[in-house]
Amino acid sequence: MADVILAGIHKAFGDNPIVRGVDLEIRSGEFMVLVGPSGCGKTTLLRLVAGLESADRGDIQIGGRTVNTLPPRERDVGMVFQSYALYPHMSVRENLAFGLTLRRVDRAEIDRRVNEAAALLELSLLLDRKPKQLSGGQRQRVAMGRAIVRRPSVFLFDEPLSNLDAALRVQMRGELARLHQRLQSTMIYVTHDQVEAMTLATRLAVFNKGVLQQVGNPLELYQAPANKFVAGFLGSPSMNFLEGKLERGQLVGRGYSVAAPAGSEAYESRDVVWGVRPQALALSEKGELRGSVDSVERLGSDGFVYLKTEAGVVAARFDGPVSLKVGDTAHASIVGGAIHLFDAESEVALPLQAASAARVVAP
Image (cartoon, rainbow, N blue to C red; front, side, top):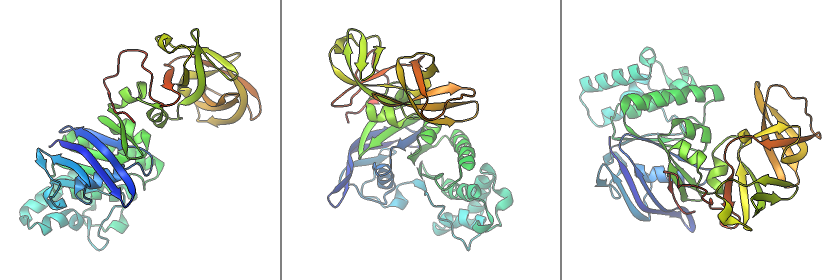
């Protein structure tokens, strides 16, 4: 295991800045997930750690060593790519052993490591098959096994589940979590899927446009987002946002007036954007928000109704069957969960209570 420290990392391609002054410490043995929309710089940052790209400025340390000038093979990292990158003419056994063979590791040691990795990943019965004879999930396990046999101090995962179907992604998420628990290795995982990020991470690092927005454990970031971007990116469906003003203990806007959260008195008469998660809104006979049904998303035992209000479209959760159809009028009430306040101009969260333990990074 090893810690990874990124200090003042900048990277641009031509005139296009991709990573902008990132400072991030990844602790030894933790599962750090780098998450954000496509093009936010997370994969570039992973490639910088791997040595596949060079930073324009800043330092990268792995296990206490500055590795800026070291080639990839000397950084003691194992990388699993989005594509499986398996050799089609080789068997599973040969794919797993290939990196060790290039390093001229003793044959008996290669066999031992390959057999251990195969047992760990439930590949023992597939060692003589070629990649084309495997399912997508099995191929991804082979790709992970190829990194495991090298016994690196840090594992790097670049969206390894994005090519799998939905059911297989859920299965592989569980396998990755179990793998981390067994190996207790430092893992850095890149994804744009916030569900993957929330379920896998020991800690999350959220990025937008090359800038690190916030770092903390998933629950901390979900409950106390540093800014509107983090609040909207984490959670499904996305948080509802409405423009308003604080007036005498109420949030007032176009077509609504709702009770302001406790601790908001300091922002009296201030223009704000306030957010509430769809799970904290419920359909009601007469609620704070009123609108026409824009769409209904039924998920089985529950679902979400999207209401077109005067202030904008909001999503509200419902339980059981509903008879609403597009165009109907409906109301939604705030039934639980916190209202989040954000400055209307900077979009930074306005604190209502003691600061979260999550590290906040100015956007």
